[in-house]
Image 1 (cartoon, one colour):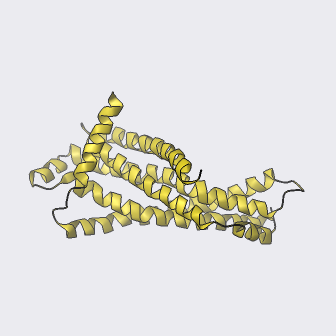
Image 2 (cartoon, rainbow, N blue to C red):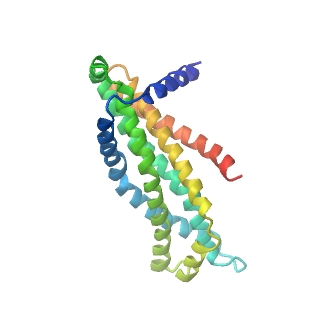
Length: 246
């Protein structure tokens, strides 16, 4: 029953978020600010993880497919498919759920316990829309860019490790990443990313918006936001894969 209680309250909050903004210019400035906070400030961690992720996938694939009947370019092909279809959209979204989700929940939760949200509502401002909607729009716009960058850097990381360690010929790796490339794979990954961005921001905003108590409860809301977002990312990853690939 507790699940349905939270689900109903979450859906009501989504309806409040989508109400017409009081002043569109304020929302535009907030969206730009959130694009920096949620997107640009995550570039570093996304870049580092993507490069090493691609390198590790390449090494492990090369070590586990050392068979004379298996062409060497298959390593590059497997690395590309793994990164584009799963590692970049899903793993990066899980990492962003921890970084971005905890930030959103703690920020909004702190505003709730310090009665700043109450002050906004007294002034006639749609507090839920003002605080959560710009974050949702910013994440939906920026996360696909981060994931696209992650794809490129992951494949580049595989090329670097092939070049530096000689785990496989670089020419075979390049041939493998180009072999039977399907642009639909990129579309599939970006669709997943947009859904994950929406889930992360709205779930984190929900937990922050309904925080009660003090600093301890803010921390608990942040933890709940990250855990719940991660669970729903894994769940929707399965659903979207079934719908879009099978």
